Length: 504
Image (tube, rainbow, N blue to C red; front, side, top):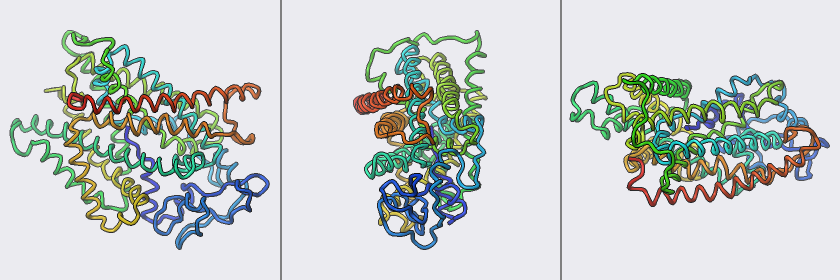
């Protein structure tokens, strides 16, 4: 569930890598084919990247008529064909090289993560039959909203969620998305620390044979991990950690394989725990389980980059890519992995299913592997979190990085201890950031979407069907916004009402 779409741009801004920014940044340039911009004025003579970092003019400030870029900002000659080139997958002489297979892998890497560890408890909250139904509905809605974002990005020519939110929803949409990103990154950091707290001390206890030893206390082990990773969080160049997200995905794959082997290879063959139910009739439990499921589908921040990097010959396959990755592979793994954990332990399944496995060598390896990879992923979350906070509060942040990083890690640490449950953290992510990113923002933006020109046909099918499909998609967007808001608020209330009993 962890998102890192801002990491690469953050690293480049911190290094002052102008050439990389010119290739990857989103540019403030919109014009029609007659050589005028969308406000009826003359074409601007320069393009500025977004970011709001020192020495670089912010995209959103430039769009609203702010001053020219400051010293050091890269300048690029304007061209009326830029927007059309962005939609077709080529900007200047920089053809995109993404393929259907690489796009599926990238989308899966963005969506799949530690949420898989809490899905067994999500099914315990809902019951296996109702859980499958909710998972399929959530998957369908996430698939639909991803298609909305692809259409929106191709029409606007912008390659970030923030840029498209400003394009369609104005400054209020941009500010709302900034707050959403900060909350998402912070809760992602909390979830990582909870995983370390739950898994690494248990591994140390099993290996040492002294479960009561001071060095095996969860709080001490977690604090030591944060102190060790603290200097890395201060680095401006995080290139050495660029493979940790891929390594984390490999660890999740190992966990899923180990769970399958443990479930089907247990003595007497696969068995269903006696406490398993098909449908849970408690609405509070069902809402909490659904919130955990929503957190497993957050991959919307990266869809613009994935689509923008596709080859021109592959761009028409973007809907197939989304179908294969989200309703296909991810949902299949989520359902089977969640059901195996629930069937194995029944109602006693923990918020992190790895905690349930005792004296299991396969799962012991998974514990230490996931603990270490999440430790090394923390800097990849803290770095964009600091940048987002600097953009929201430039007068407060970036004065003393040593104290800022220490304060952030301390806040994350104590929040993780306060929550004490991975499913609580993921549930909060799902009913707040997840609902907003997956349903509300895409729906609101789609309601503002007015297709223009043949460069980016927004809907599949024959020409005479497009108006009908457009109306149907607008109705679907309205449903996503209304039902997503109601369900998210209800799930949040359920989390608060059942706080003391949630996520055992």
